[in-house]
Image (tube, rainbow, N blue to C red; front, side, top):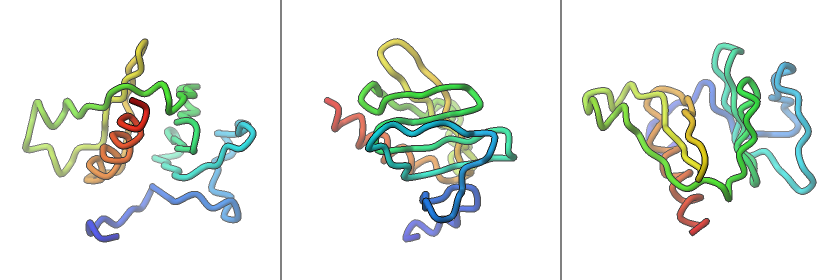
Length: 121
């Protein structure tokens, strides 16, 4: 990857690779395609599809069109944590939640979700 990141727990989803954790079984909606899959210690995972962000362990299914804001409070509160940061905060009109990521990859996903949010407006 151009940024020099070497992802170990984040994958471009490939239907042939069967990267779905058996504990995360859920049904994709019609015309829904998984794009990115993240897993951490088999306890936490998320799936970014063309329609939703799915966090199975938290039983969260967030429509991408509901996202209104993204923030990185850890870095704002402690700028020195920039390289070690592993979370972003996503907002909808009625809720907020943390999305956990691989270390040093927050800026990639910040830009992806910022693009989605900007497109919603």
